[in-house]
Each structure stands twice: as structure tokens, then as C-alpha cells.
Image: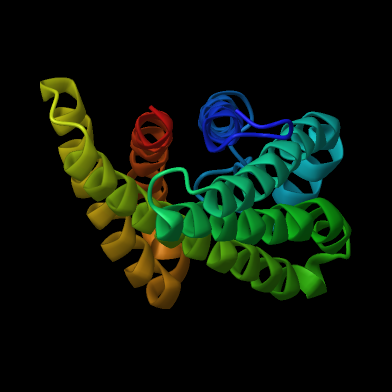
Length: 221
């Protein structure tokens, strides 16, 4: 290790940050979950949206700010690992781009969701427009996570012949391919694919983190 930061240390930071985003997303869905209709028969109304962002905003902001910090660490750590040659440079570049695009979508959420939600019923269309824009960057980030998972899987498969490494690399490549295909579809289809796109991206994130760390460690051994 040199006097600054090795690729393996950068990979460790990225791994922790990636897993942290998975945990925060699970916690968000389990405890906050987004606006829900007061009357299911009437569907989701502007009043429901405004109530959610009024009553739960402090909790939402804490989760999203935590994610913003994690995504910044992912972007920076990915760039450092890419420069220092921690396995697949293309995969680390993809991870860095994923972190950057996720910062954009989190920034849209933190800065625009609440004011647009509280703008009144006549501006409900604008709320959904902003949400759709934020999720476009969300899907794009998941595409790059999927590409990173494929890249790390290939790198690990070439450099580590241990059975555990082969299993991780295989799962990473399959999960990455699924994330790429579903999230590319979501870029065009939009919110209708949010749950399969998010699930595929989450699995790819976990295995990209594991495979990336293993590949970076192997490159310095």
C-alpha cells in the first residue's frame, strides 16, 4: 500500500457504501414506503401525497441524506479504485458513474419532491413528472451497477480459480445481466417496471460489492 489509498482500501469503502444503500432502501420500503391512499377506492390523491411529505419528511430526508453520503463515497471510491487498477477498470468506472447518477436522483428527491408535492392539486402532474425524472436516473444508475457486476464477475473469474470465487463471479454476472436488461427496459417503460428493476438492481448491487472487493484484493496479492 502506498502513502495514499490502495485500490483494495477504496474497494472496501465502496463495498460498505453499496451495502449501506441496500440496507437504507430496504428500511425505507419497510418503514416509510411512499405515499399511500387514505381511501384505496379513490386511489392516490394530491392530499395523500402532501400529507406524506408533511408528516414523514424528516424521516425521509434522513434516509435520503444518508444515501447521498453513501453514493458520494461510491463515486469517489470507484474513481480511486479505477485509477489504482483494482481489477476491472471499466467495472470501477461503471460503479463511479452509478454513484454519480444516484446522487442526481437523490438530489432531485431532496430538493424538489416536497415543494412540488405541496404546490397544490393543480400541480399534481408536475409532481409525477419530477418523480419520473428522478427514477429515470435511478434506473440508469442500476444499469451501470449491473455492468459493474458483470465486469467484476469476469475479472474475478479470470484471476481467482477458487470455487467460492467462481460461484460469486457467476452470480454477479447473472445478476448484473438481469439488472442491465430490466433497467434498460425501465428507462423506456418508466414507473411500471419500478419493482422488478429495483429488485434486480439491489441483487446486482450486493454481488457487485462482493465481487469487486474480491477482485481488488486479488489484484494486489
